[in-house]
Amino acid sequence: MKISEQIGIWSRAFGRGVYPYQMTWFLDLPGRGLIMSARTVAGRLPVRPDARVLEIGPGSGYYSVQVAKRVPDGALTLLDIQPEMLEKSASKLKAAGTSNFTIKQADAKILPFENESFDAIFLVTVFGEIEDRASFLSEASRVLKANGVLSITEHHPDPDFEYADAVSISLQKHGFVPLQKLGWRWAYTLNAVKVSTGES
Image 1 (tube, rainbow, N blue to C red):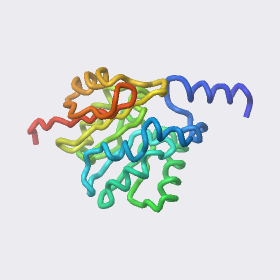
Image 2: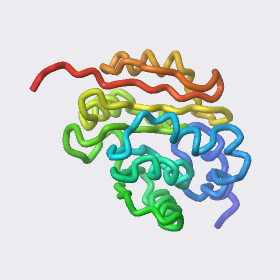
Image 3: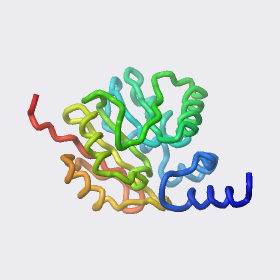
Image 4: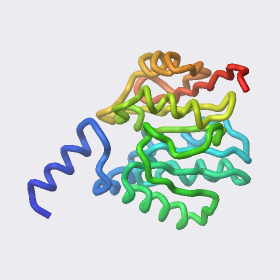
């Protein structure tokens, strides 16, 4: 690999935008758990054991294993725009002995799922990477079941970090009602519920 290509990868890794799959090793460094552990993120998801959960942008699968364990009678679907990320996260799940998952390559602005397919959707340090946020939130509302939960986790030092107040306003504009904020200013989870309109 040329030096210019290496520089470009490192620039994308520590700048704004989609995180490069070539840097997934960095996502698995032990210190990451001190900021936001996988067990913490999974524990903040208000789901039942039989829930169907969608993870947007799983990266290396750092959080996926613990979330899959939260839904032993349900299923976890991983969606990422980069097939290499899906391969890495799937390998991690398989190595952990997890089988209740599927993977799907797609852009988050057009979710390739039926209406009301999921009980919950979660994203960890991904919300700020989504350029067409209005389309994503519209799609998230469509594929969530009535009263389904959209869970957004953000923490520093992610360069795409979004403050909870700004995220909350964005969610409310697209029909979500914030339920709870867990954590603190620089490392938090915001859970919001899809409002049921009562329409058939």
